[in-house]
Image 1 (cartoon, rainbow, N blue to C red):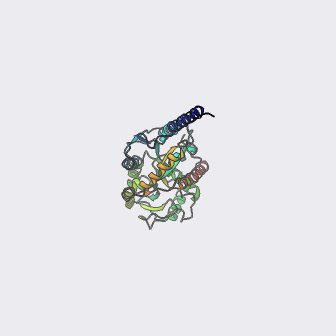
Image 2: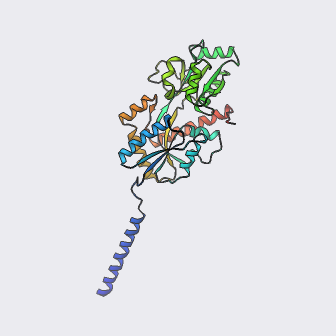
Image 3: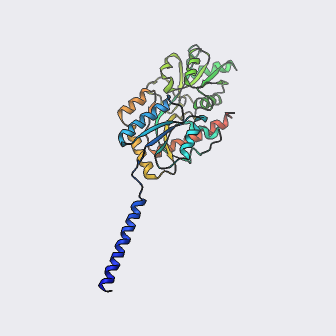
Length: 325
C-alpha cells in the first residue's frame, strides 16, 4: 500500500471512529433526573398521603436540585392516578405515591392496570397499624369479653370502618370469621366521621387507623393491634396475633412506585435516594409525630411485602365474600 492510500485509509477509519463515537454519545441517556419530577398522589390534598408525599418531594428537590411537584389526581378509589402513572412515561420523572389499597383493589374491582406487574416498587415511606377499639360504654375490657358479649347478644353489635373495601373493612370481616362473632359492618366516609360515631357511642367497636385516630385512643377501650409486634407507644395493647388470630400481620402503608418499564439504573438511583431520605432524623421524627412508623426498606423487601399482602387480602376478600357492589 503506497503512502497516499495508507493515509486515505487512516483518514477514513478515523472518520468512522468519530461517527461511531458521535452516535454513541447521541444515544446515551441524559443524566437522571433531567427534568422536573411529578409525584402523582391519587387522593385529595390534605390527608396523610398528601402530607407524606410533599415531605418526601421537598427533600428530593433539595437533594437533587431539581423541581419536584406533587399532583393530586383523586377519583375512583385512587385508580385514576395509578393508571396515569402505569400508562405514563417510564423515565423516572413520573412517580406514584399511593397506599395499600393498590393491592386490595385487585380482588375488589376491574382495573385498567395490573398493580403487581405494571409498577416497580421503590420503598414504603411509612406504615400504619390498625387498632381495634371498643366504645367506652361497652361493658368489656378485652377481646375475650367482647366475643362473649357479642355471642350472647346476636345481631346487636357493630364494627365501624372508614370505608367499604378498606383495610379496616377486611380486618373486621376477618375478625368475624375467626371468632364466630356477627359484628355488623357500618362504613363511614373517612376517619373523622368514624371517630365521631365512636365518641358518640353509636358503634360497639371499630378498626381505626393508628395515624389519623391516635389522639382519640385514650377515650376508647383498646382491644388489639394489627401487625406482628406491639406498638412502642401502646405497649399494654396485645396484637391480635398474640390473642390467637391469624392473617392480621399486614400493616397499612404509604409507598413509592415507578412504571415497571423504567430503566433499572434510574429505578435504583431513585430508590437509594428515597431510602436515604427516609433515614434522616427530621423525616423520621415527622413521620412518628403523625402516629406512623417510618419506612425506608429496600426494593426487594418491599416487593416481598407486596406479594404477601396481596395474597392475604385476596384470601380475606374471597372467604368473606366482600364486594363493593
